[in-house]
Image (cartoon, rainbow, N blue to C red; front, side):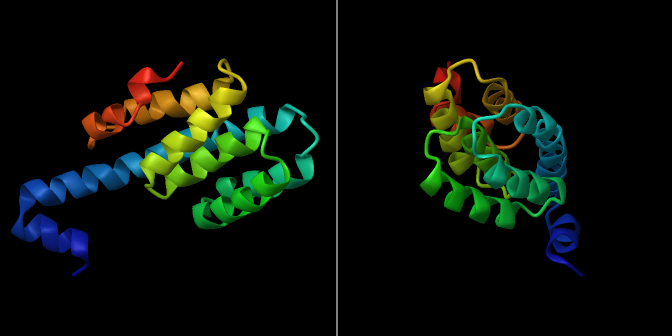
Amino acid sequence: MNRLENLLAHSPSRGLRALQTRVWLVSLSCALVACVPHLLAQGQGASDDVGPIANALRNHDFAHALSLSQAALIKHPGDLRIWSLRGMASAGMGNLPQALSAYHSALKLDSKYLPALEGLTTLRRMPCSASSITAQGIAAAP
């Protein structure tokens, strides 16, 4: 019996919340990956770095996408596409504070950048611990 099955059997309310969180993370990752073509269409000179990150996201390999984005940001700290992809990878891994930070970094570069705004909106709609995320600054996003 895996951990989720055990929670559902012994603590239905906690198990249900855990299941809802997993379902939400899967739907979040699918929604965010849908933004990848838009990111690739916008050229900022770092396409050699953006492509592999986008491919990792398409394959739901969020840890690899996060690692690639970290390396790319060292070379291109002003590329808002990479910051947004980092937000997607972080959200896909369930690291919502890191996702929030990455989206805010993209929005500091361009306050109307759609993929970052969509990422923040998606986080705001999160069913689990939305109040803690709002307290960390989503409500104050541009």
